[in-house]
Length: 209
Image 1 (cartoon, rainbow, N blue to C red):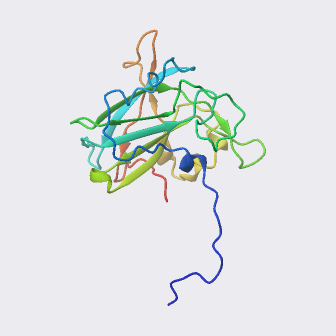
Image 2: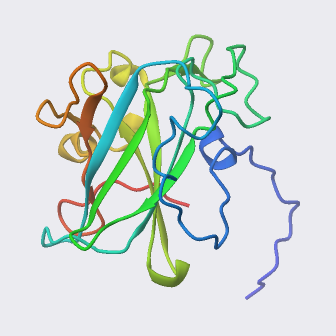
Image 3: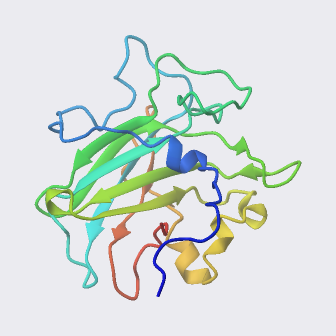
């Protein structure tokens, strides 16, 4: 059996999801890494939101001490990464990346800005729904799972092939956060809950490599 390719390799373009993820290495998680609204001298533009939930196993038990990373576009739908050439303004006060560690019960929390939709090259008028990327690391960085969180009621859902690549309707629903009025802060920030189930029948759909 020949183990080397006989034909030239075909280059595949990376998506914005692959190119815009944060690179933290093995640095220690700092106390305010989960608040994307205080990472610069000024406050970022856009709608402030709280995103929280639990990292769970297949039995619904919280998974403690899990490293959770987040990255996203800004309120105008643009990533800070140089490869994003979407002609929307950059926000100098928004890095679009944060991280935290789940507590003893598997709970995590971020404060951020609601991302905007953005165009992409699937067809001449293709737009991605507003979404946030999540990366969940296992112990000692041995394993990494990546998923996307969407917002309820987005009108772009029917037109997005990435969202609809998850063919099971119930599984797709697990990628959509739920509005959380109980944890919304009056006159400050709306709250969304997004539980990340790592495995099992009710697992959150993850991106394949």
